[in-house]
Amino acid sequence: MAELTRADVEHLSRLARIDLSDVELDRMVGELGVILESVATVQQAPTDGVEAMSHPLPLANVARPDEVRASLTPQEALSGAPEVDEQRFSVPRILDQD
Image (cartoon, rainbow, N blue to C red; front, side):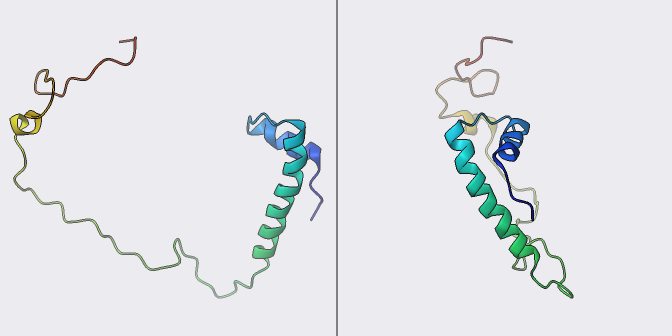
């Protein structure tokens, strides 16, 4: 694999729009180099006959069934609200624009 240069890291930081100082650029050359070497090592693993998977453990859908059941009325849900406006919680405005 080709050696990662400071110019490569600088180019990547510009593409990612990350402003790095000279010290950070120099440090990232080494850190990204280690990451790339690790990825290259993993890519050498024998994968012939290994089925692709999205997760290392089997998963089951743990969501409950979607069943209609009794719930709070709007009045019950809003009973503890400090302020109510047209059957909705009223909260202070945080944006100046409409």
